Length: 304
Image (cartoon, rainbow, N blue to C red; front, side, top):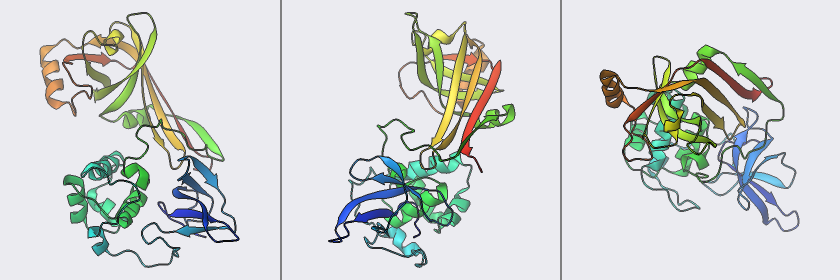
């Protein structure tokens, strides 16, 4: 038995042949597509590790029937053929934006991503920059090329907290060195700052941040919870989790926070910020966190 990400695992009743349970394969543990699989069951939306028995078979979602891994690749012409999805179609453009974000996160060029997904770079450019509704075959190839799932590219599970999948069978937790921590922090994104709020209680809030000369900076309002960071030592955390593979990393910055007051520095931050604060509103106070301690950890398979 061999499968690809996005294939469907079907468990049948041995007496009637009717489907008893089915789910999407969202994680592979072997490069050749052999079991076991991480399966998101359609009836519960839970992800479990499955070792398929004799009553199970793989079904390709595009055709709704079992296929062999030796079947020919879907030609590029299928990219223009929309297959009616089981769930309501996503808003036009959402999939393309998620593809672009995941591609940039992995530092993949458009050409390399297109090569991995067996499609033309021109079509990938169209998908990322214009509203589109690609076929399921295209989504499966893109998810495989980007190391993610069709469900994630479609925006599934947005209202669920991350990390609901099963842990690795043999996980390894290792420390990350300072240089790798700086690389993972990169230049911008969303992180969490831990502060003592005005009522004296601890609080952890997400903020859009930038990295300027190894200093963490974020924009907020003077009367907001993140502004409570000013004048004290705070903790700032960034992480990423791969739901399909049950692995990920986290980076923790600890250091004093202060207000950026130099006019030229504030002007440059405003001009070169990668994004405005997601909560909106007037948030013109820049807060800087100078790292005094920088640590990180990564969870991978023991043989990774």
